[in-house]
Length: 391
Image (cartoon, rainbow, N blue to C red; front, top):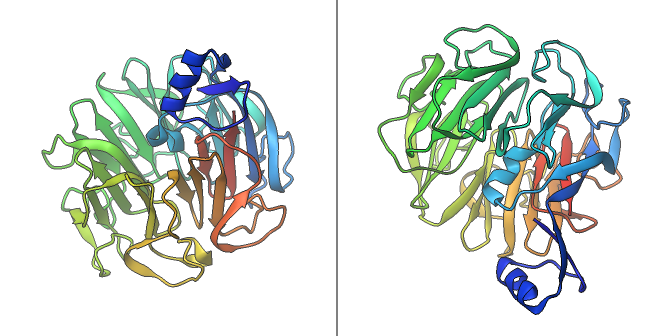
């Protein structure tokens, strides 16, 4: 929810209630302005400007785009993916642009689009648009049904086959709560607190204590306390439970499982602590997470300085990024990260070879650097793009 006020400022929830009581609020709007920076090496038109030009500072994409208050959902609503971007409008419609060569737009074709085109339907759930990498898309609807489309070479569409789908197809059930996909495997929470995975399982990233691919959803263990936040990248999975504990499994060649070793695990392993709130596996083989006290932590690969330590040193257990306690959201992809603070500022670091750091330069940054302006906490770091909303 965006707030237009007589006074300038970024308000927390309690302050908003006070402003309402004081009669200071002029109006409410759930619409935001969508901006994007960067591009991709495949010249797919991912900046949505009807061209294939790289941008190294944010440029606006026309339209009224949906804001969302939940920081846990924010990273899933705008998908700045390796070759395309997807975003929600205020009417619940889903729009997409970029590569499209694997049917990931759901338009029953394999066509590129360099400006936004609509995916049919207006009942998509703005909280649960998933598709962080490559060319596979998952999205729930408001009736808790789950729909999938795009690339399916590892069974990541959950259809019990490996057939590409260029238009949305439903997975059985009406209790799906949230989804995530990394292009190779898919993960989903159900409303009963169970966790389900399917797709590629080369290093045990599905969490089933084996390395067999699954082409239909399979439950991870028997736990019913999953469901706070999760992330997935390549052959790694990291999930927060409802009790604030953090669990990881899969490939661990650079310590990305946070176990202070480089041992690969095919079933969930706990990372110490009980105050984790938001997780984003983010960079290639690197993890970044948020705690309830507003601190930001990272570990794993540190290529291009993507762990925000002002170095490129690898870490196999969590290390804090700076000393700030005002972070409220984090996202990442490939080798760069983006984080948001409670004052409305947006910060980026890591690889910037396509201008995805929004610094009006092609540059790598090994510690958080601000993108000018005041931003809503809905944003996404894609493979070579950063997409964000202003309110």
